[in-house]
Length: 341
Image (cartoon, rainbow, N blue to C red; front, side, top):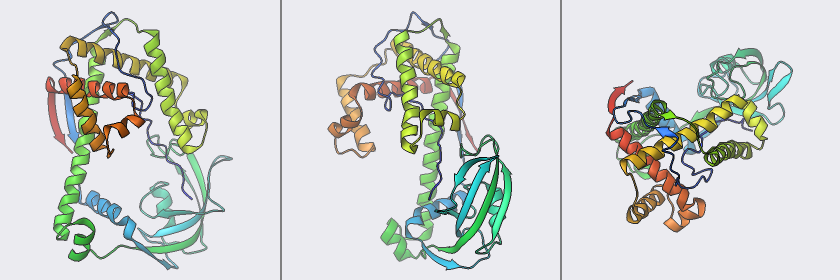
């Protein structure tokens, strides 16, 4: 059995999930732009440590591991099957008493304190502890709560990874040596982090452009579309995890005020980006749109543009491409400071 993870909700800012359609409105009567051509932002890229690389290696090898049962005591990186009951007061948060739950000690799925409590235990041992989680803990069912655990050790197994011979690496990863493979993995991780950092930086520029603008109002139709888009995004999470929309709001600690702010944020963002496009004459010709559709289909492993358009409408994709073109403009005219941490 696996517990549920609630990832941060990705709002449908591009319309791809919620199907908001292409932006054809003129919002200049509502928006007076600020100084959007001289913004400043930091491109902060997290360096890849040796520990990061080792974790990524194990992730790549996870499909090819074997397990060897042992009686304990429990050590780091072992796979442990437990009976687990997690409660907040009298309310049950997780109940794996009957079906059991498998966790790898050291991955801190329930936090470091739970993993530490398991170290040194043997099959049949029982552990009781209470953990206070901070508001940033990745599991939304646990974050910000005091959780009491009752855990019983059912099975302990060593996780055995394949031997990284040159032959194994050549056959499975097309690499001639361990050094070459690790260099490839390090470059992949760094590329992922650079892409994420770039997107965060571009979103920061959009936020600055919105904050610097004077907005006197908004069309009700646009606000309604954005409200429906945000709600549909949350509903997609509810459908994914088999719970109600109200459960999602509660688990993610989203209040009515939070929702209202998200509706307005998305409305203002759309309006400001649209007015910038109008001001700077940012458009897509039919040929440019077709090129972007083909590129997007290829990058996302669609066989053709026609297959892509079975999942997303052309209007939604056009809106996404126009937003990206506008972000390109903001980035080109901004002062970007690169920082590596």
